[in-house]
Image (cartoon, rainbow, N blue to C red; front, top):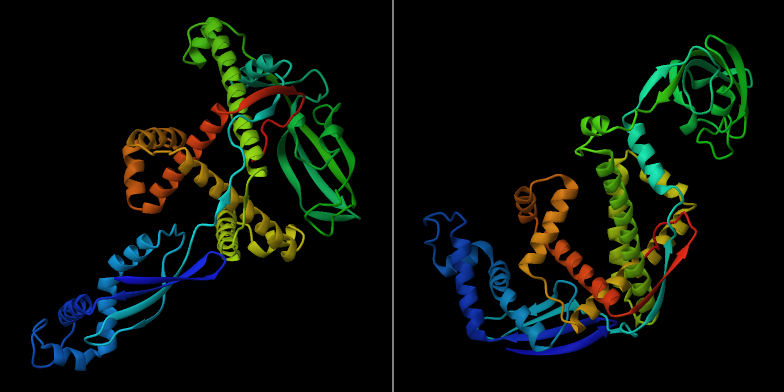
Length: 442
């Protein structure tokens, strides 16, 4: 087989290959047999009609197309191999010449992987910011555990305070008219964690059971209801109940009843271990992201428009699927992003970053010869089964029904190995910072 390569544009190439006439003839005859087995021709049993009859019945073009389906898997792969192409799309046939007794000429186009110019990715000096240990982190974690096992008790001898949960009736009016959905009976609200209009929960503090009173609030300018944006409102309140949270006494007996541990010391040791592991996890993620960011900034790649367009469509499909699960209308979501043009511009930038990241990881993985072993798959499946609460064997069965999942897992393993390599082969200085932000974005 002969093949000729032509650069079309960017990373798009065209290959014209010649398939020997003898191979084409064999494929043509096999195609006749395959077609004859699936059609009914008067006077002949299925599969027994002569070639000339089959040709008259379905047409030579149909048989040639069937013959090409037999030939192409082998010859397309051979042409790509011979021309040493690193392809990123499936070959697309643009034309062919198929004449009896002659060599078959097929032309197809395929996109190749853009060339990446890597900067330095070893021996770099990288400063990695990590949040300093939060003051009172241990006490907060212990309090959270106790709160999880706490009880609520009625308060009868004092007014409500900011840490209580109150039960009340309310009716809201704006400009003298009842607010749609702005009334309720026996509504319970945790005053310390309210998601009501700003100022609402604060005005429920300091009132007694059975007390009736009004509170005045102003709806935020960004409120979802156009009629209420920035408008003042009055809510009539009747306090029904006041409840306080009572934490259990921290004893060995309590620990045994509420956890897998036997003593208070064991529980405390586990909480501290969890805090330490979370901190190490943050260090790891921030280190990987910081080093990878340095590598990206020193590397370059020309991304063809076709790749960007496909990635944008993929991002849009992901968005649509996730929004549909949440019951959010696509058009309303796009409007919430400013404008369709602004949203599309954001998607284009996201697409470019994702493509560049993927290409650079792939380039490094080839240079350092990353291998994906069976043990890697088993480890990744084990992690995923634990996260999803699914039996590993059941997860494997699900993945086996969709080859794309296995490809995705393989890519994740490669990504993990490249990131681990980058952290291990660069000089990292950890710098503690006071910040609420726990990780550096990739």
